[in-house]
Image (cartoon, rainbow, N blue to C red; front, top):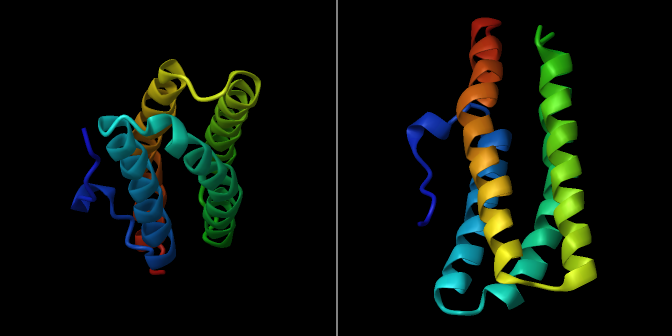
Length: 135
């Protein structure tokens, strides 16, 4: 199942939206590779992308929240920290045991699903706050 960019994922911030699109593209490349029986080779580059992505993207999001005095920044940052821990655990699993079908499934469920949900719920709240503040 490929993930599609839809309007309910838009935050209205061009930088954040572009980064979210990059993420969805990376997850879809992994899913396509899995469908072709090549998921084990694609997972290494997907995990490397995610490791870099979360540092840059979450930093950008948190800076934006700080700039606009987002009232729930502490909880939002906590969500990010929990997710970073999940990614680190999956990267550790990959480094210890290589690319397994179970690990590819975890990337899809624990990472892709979490991020789509986070964008739709939490990032949408941030976008609404920024819009209300008049950008």
